[in-house]
Length: 284
Image (cartoon, rainbow, N blue to C red):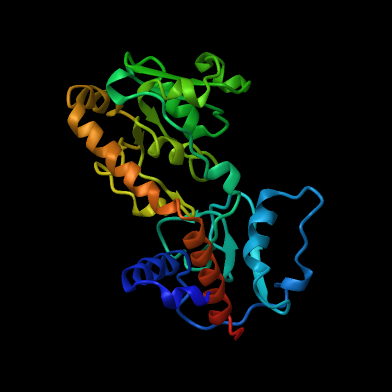
């Protein structure tokens, strides 16, 4: 972390702003006896990406370091400071300290081979609809003229909305792609925002290392209402306003480049971890 002091002041400010966003702890507290010590943290035999990603950060700190962690899709805030992949955007979420976990699944992008003006003039979505809000999305939007949306799971509840699987490359052939949260965040959001297609979604309720809570509707994505009632209207609008659509796509592309610097991302994660230890009265 000594490299931080050698960086230009603008870079230091950018880094510390992100550190403060991920780790909002601002008071000192002691962890309960149930905390895990670094020397006892084990990468399970399954070698989950959560364990591997966490270990890449934790290994740089003393064996005596202690912490709480919760892996998986988390939609609640723990009672004690805890490292998590995701947290609610609204409310007092300071006990949920974000790290870049399950990165293979959540932080992949693909090269978009299609120019925007060569894409089909439709909105597309494919995915599993295990959750009621995804099933509601399909019920409301399945028959909209400019929408090609469908479930790819085998749940009885989605039988009427089932459509063939589409690869990411096939989805990128459409001007508009819908992003909808699942158990927590939407896994397709990052690759959509890195593409030449326009992202449509509701205002997000959960966030990860991607800082979904900082995304601005109308600037980074097209916001639709919670009941999806304005989706067809929004699709029609951006079909007739291609310049505005491409401006939003450009902004989305610029946003995601913030996460394309491995050394800086690693430094931010280390500082988040260090900040956690300092605010749980573990002086390193």
